[in-house]
Length: 365
Image (cartoon, rainbow, N blue to C red):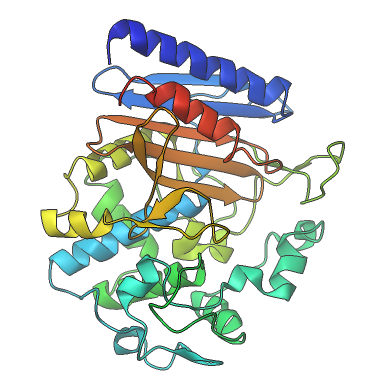
């Protein structure tokens, strides 16, 4: 991309950030673009409403389901080292954990987990979980603590959605189980594995899995929620502190735009996984309409979408109580974009985020 095109793209993205605040009512929005040696960071609104502080590139935030790409990366590293196989069954690593109501861990493979074809019920759609975490009751429950095994138990208390490999459905339970397999295969905690295998080698100094920590280890964005109420005038609440054990290897990681763009650049650029595992991860299958995000395809812990400009980008999105995030880049990893809004209402994935991606990548096709 030429310098003129880069400047025009950055200007367009900045305008979208401003729109997120002035038209969509988000407290703030940030975006970072990594393009060779020309990194760019933009922000609008505030990082914290009480202080009025402007967001900075080093501000940490909860990345939500972008965590899945980290988890899948570790699993594929272990596969490349012959410490496990994608065709291993869940029961081989976690005997008896996934059983009952049509769930059978002897027939579900690690591949089924990573590409969402396991048929395991999503624990996040359990009625009790929805009542506690997708309603105003979240203010009473945001410090609740779960073990991964408890999350799986909630999932298998429901009927399986379909036999393994016969359909596709986005289930957070898949990546809870993948995280447990990582721990079993390595003998380390999930947090230590992320640090040892991803954060330290890539010098991602602000990226970590917090476990039961309810706050942040560094400067960070504050998170705001309307407690899932649809009213545009619903009051907002500061939900910055929360127990992330609800997410585990699904969505607990904390990072920054700088670290995220570096991670995805290294991943897509082929510098984290061996070629065979890289191909496995990026073998994309179209997601059936109505099952997740229409028009997207999914690989192993990573998705892709073809933008209106013709460029196909690869990455993942994430949602936490109090924020939405998006991380996508070109197939070769040469241009990467990370985004975050520090409010959890609306649907920025379908509007603000995709508009920003189009602005950022329109000259790369």
